Image (cartoon, rainbow, N blue to C red):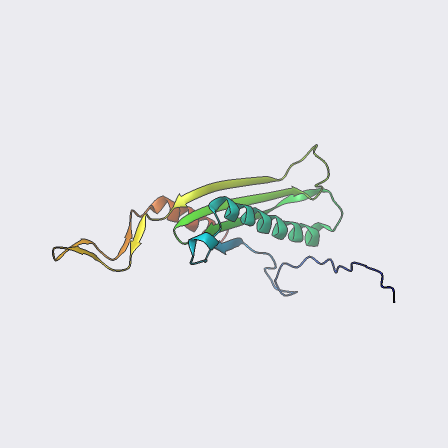
Length: 161
């Protein structure tokens, strides 16, 4: 019995939103690195690579739905924001898709802005640190960085207000 090997692919751009939904594209992608064991966690550069991949995929799916499948320079850029974190260190990314023509190295380019390794806090104490019956470190975060939270909030609220 002779079987021929063949590959069948159902190529489909799927944004994950139901058809007819009034907001069919993501505003911001959130990627949470939740591995509890350090050896299994993504390194920050690996998380940023994952963020670029997901942002590009979402932008490309949106561009194809808006402008068709032909590779070309887009009438209006498609922008996708992304936030990646392990809960303590944040990565911020904005991808602007200007063209779906990825074969050419000439002309219009796609852009990515990255603000990496932004610490939200130094450490979080689950129990107070007590020395000689005196609370040295209270429960909660130490070394809080409000600028990191402001960046997170800016991406979260962008276009909403």
